[in-house]
Image 1 (cartoon, rainbow, N blue to C red):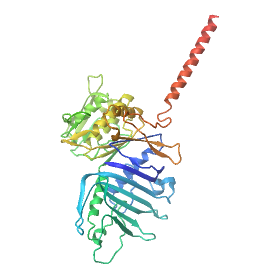
Image 2 (tube, one colour):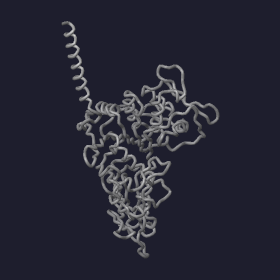
Image 3 (cartoon, helix red, strand yellow):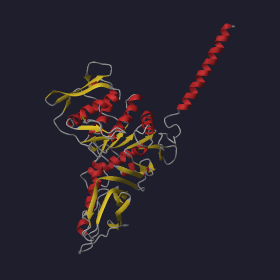
Image 4 (cartoon, rainbow, N blue to C red):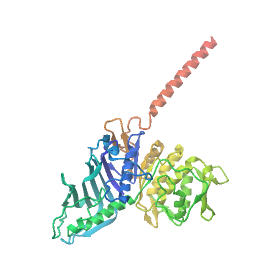
Length: 470
């Protein structure tokens, strides 16, 4: 789970400032305010980690990638290639990292990793990128266990290593220089060969890769529903960026059971089969009476839905469009494996206001869900335009259904130059202490102008009536 994030010189952001990441992290803002860029940056890092090209510093995406950012010049702030993209994030490790220094025999442990990096153009003519510097810091809670940094030497294609709380010892051989790093985060392959006690660096690289393996993305436009789905028994990694694997995910998860710990309850609710959980959440959104994925024949399946107030089930394409759009959201939230980070854009799209409010309750259930007796430890990063979604979270904070520490919310403010990412200060009563002006439109202004117009009409009607009576 991410604890904090900061991005500099990426797209419209000169500096996001330090973002506190919580189990539910929300990003608001006007269209083209830059809030989507934060998710795009994380997805670019994921694409880079998963790219087969270990020497590519960034992989901005290809034809079938979740995000496609183009060249460095197209993604860097003000499209100025002289700017350096720098970033930092800290995350909680799934398991405690523990290793022994074979030289000093000292044991090092940590449950948090912090990573910082700076990327720039090495050759402007060929648009070649370089990792100017990166640094890892291992923490045991809030205490730093060690730090290791690789910095590129000026005018040279080699790196020097700097360490804190750890003494690297060279092997007795010629002191070869460390050359290219792997991607934006990986220690050079030669480091284990050159040093007697550098094997722990491979474990750190692995933790970085595990972080982005746990990240999954669902975009704002989901695929439209089909009447018939083909499933050959495969278990997809996720529902896909457009929800294309939603039905396959439901079918492959039929043996899984999910339970939810309600606030104040001493234990979790009885575990329910996966498909039943999805049906229940659709009911709680007020969208359906029943939901079922049924086999037609062989590998062919269809989704049958009974809408509210109806007695007969229909195929998914024959029901309201909002259901087909929110179904991938619900499935992804409960399908993702434990310790996942789910990045979603506009999960509320095409839902009416009451369903948008209820969706916030579903998200609270997601972060409180359990599987096989253990917390699923899911983190949700959500870009949304929904006032109703936020209002419901505010209410639940006031009701102690969810603590304010488990929710972080930010507003992309483009009235300033450069744009700023401002935290919404939500207190224990659910109040937002620093509402930005016209955050969700000028509601009071609309009410005032409506009242003025109504008064003007009444006065006009009174005048016309008195004129007629005379």
